[in-house]
Image (cartoon, rainbow, N blue to C red; front, top):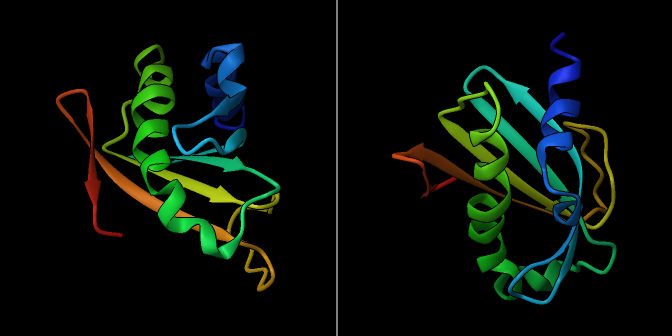
Length: 120
């Protein structure tokens, strides 16, 4: 059953959420959800992401947490205390270290139905 939970969470996202254009104008596609004790990790990819893009996409983390992660989790039985948003330029196995890959992460505490940014 635990293996099905990420798939069920992905299915709970609106179809349009699986390919979204965030406020930065960057297109993001969700490709993985990893659920751990108290933490939901939503992993997004955009093939045109570069290492110089962090400032341009910084607001996308909060937007993805507020507009995609929270609504999907609210409609499920999953109640994490933390949400981690991962943005990368390619699909990678969870936990993989690939030096040439671009990866950015931000963590949010879930409090009163809101994503509160945490220093990662």
